[in-house]
Image (tube, rainbow, N blue to C red; front, side):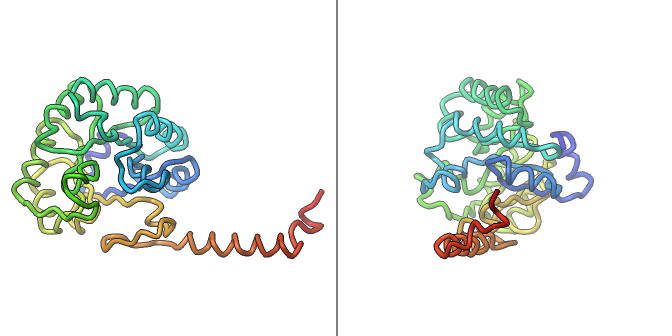
Length: 258
């Protein structure tokens, strides 16, 4: 999967699947399963590093995880988030830092949060042939302004303006996060590039979920999440069994000894 193929899926009426991953183990599983795109999201700040927001993760850390994922993937389009304050200062800063991501990870695209306010930055990235995905609606990097990570965005005029500004500036796709389904449907019909929803209903051109949430690893259960497995429960039970076997001197037994 490359960027043109990703874009063409909308015209072909083929829904796009995307998941987040941060390491070779999960990235290779998702890729083997056939997911269209893997996002190395700045959500690793919360999911991997244990922070309350996405703000603390650094550009170097995103590059570290992005390189691991890109190296582990054979088919899916790998997209890496530009983290907080790696692109907001200026479009020159954005180009420089996005360039580092492409050079040092081998990823196929980057993602940044914003629409109207980031249109010039998106335009400069596109002018440098750096494929960029936009992100409108609930923007986790704006959590201090929005108040909470679960703030549903309902300003239809602003959401549409952000989406159209990102498209006009050269974004190849847009994530729509935590907006009403009817607004997401309207945006998806109004613009020609794929919309990827998370908490934005069934009418987007594709969907994205945070991998550890979908697998039941994180314990996070918002309304929009369908938990496809309970890997955390399986891991807990396996760990308890291991501890019991060690304490009872059942492991290692003869079959597990040299």
